[in-house]
Length: 214
Image 1 (tube, rainbow, N blue to C red):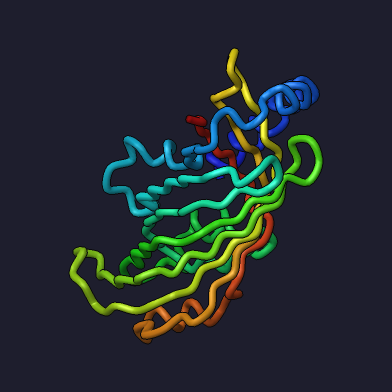
Image 2: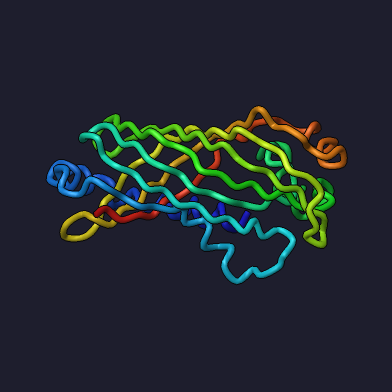
């Protein structure tokens, strides 16, 4: 929860630069066709070591501008879940973490390579969709493998592109996204019992991506 509050605060702070960013986007034609970015939230996992709630989240995006409106990319991601992802804010997400009542009897590691499409809508405002096939590995609390499976994970984003620096190569993209998952196969029974209590989607997750163009 602390991580999400920090991201929310950054969202508000970045509004100060949003208006000035409009001019930078107009001036920055398509000098740099490629970009690399990552979600800032992954930095919060550094230093947590072996904590039970450390998601060990690593995510990287490599994108190419087709033109001023259309951007395609590749997404590489891996993370470790300690409880079902479908617990919504209004279900008491933070309380569930504090009480540990919905924790898995181990962990779920999900790893995948996917694709993304980003469409610039108006000035810095954009919408994007990401499709990420994932290879699942279920582990017990001693990191011993229990089972493997497959999941198709998709996410839908609405955000704002803000560029910095003399050449506008550094950028941040505050955004809100929703995600859902389907074709979720071969889940061990003790994990499935917890998953079935909650949704197969998660709504309104705030995030902040940081990147560079080249």
